[in-house]
Length: 369
Image (cartoon, rainbow, N blue to C red; front, side):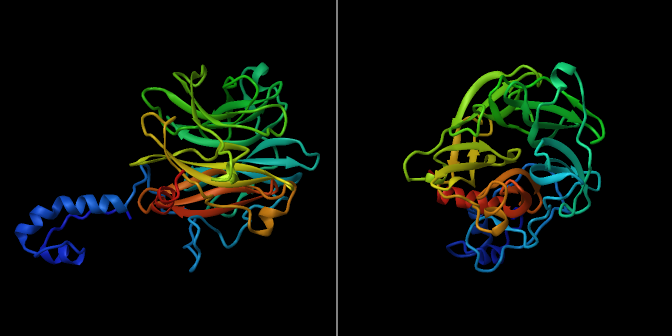
C-alpha cells in the first residue's frame, strides 16, 4: 500500500479503530496517531511506477514471503542457437518493454553475455551473438564473462559482471541503447565476484557491493562495499556482513553474495542476496534479504535469519549445478510496492518470483538475526 490518509472526519477515524469518542475535536488530536500507525504498516519504494511489471498474486495458503511464477522457468536452456544454459541474468525496464543482459553458457561450456528483449518481462528474445565491448583492448580482451547485473543510473545502463582477467574480477561497462557497449576499467584486482552497483550516488560517491573470492568455486566469502568518485578508481572499502557460523542460520554459513541492484525504500536499502551452505551433497544456494542504512550502507539494520526462497522445485534442484536459487535482478513498481525477482535455477534455466516491499520487510523484521 502506498496511500496516505488525508481525510479526518470522525466516521473515517472510527473505521480505522481510533480509541475514544469520535468528534471533530478528537480528530485533530488523533491525526498524529494515524500518521504513526499507517507509517508503521506501510513501506515505500523510492523509484518509478512500472505499470507493466510482471505479476501474479500470492497463492492461497502459501506462507513464505516470496512466491514463484506459475509458468517457471521463463527461459529454458536452449534460448539461443548454441546455448547449453541461460541463468544468473539481469533485466531492466527499457522503452515500452524490457531489456536484459543474459549469461548464456554455450554447448562448448564457454561463458559469455548476451542481449535480450521482452515486451512483458516473461517471454524473451535473446540474441545469438555475444556482446562486443568497445574500449581499451587490454581491458576488453575476453577470458570469460558471467553473472551480470544491470543498473540504470545517470542516463546509462551500467553492467557489472564476473570478468576473467588473470582470475575472476569485476568487469564494468555501460550502454545507452543495448546496441553499443563500452567497457571501463575492471573495478578490482582478482579475485572478486558479485559486483553490484547502487542505483545512485551516496554522499557524492558511487557505491558497489562485492565479495572477495579465490580462483575456484570459493568455499568462503563475506560482502564488502567500495566507493568511487568516477566509476574507475575504487576504495574506502567497508565490511558489510559475514556468513553465519553455527546453526542459528546455517543456510548462509559457507558464503554470501549480493544479488540484484539494491532497492531504495523509505527505511533504507533493501538488499536481496544469496547464501550458501556446504552439505554432504555439495553447495545449496538460497535467498535472503537485508536492510542497509540509507546513508551508510555498510551498516546492516535487519537481516533475515530464515531464507526467503530455496530450491524446492524440480528445475531448481536438478540441472548442471543442482540445488541453486541465485537472484540477479529485480523489477519494482513504486506505486504498488510490487517486486519481481529474476533468478538462476540450478545453473541451467531462469525463473521469476514475486513479493512486495511490505511483505519482505515485515518478514525480515520478524525473523532478523
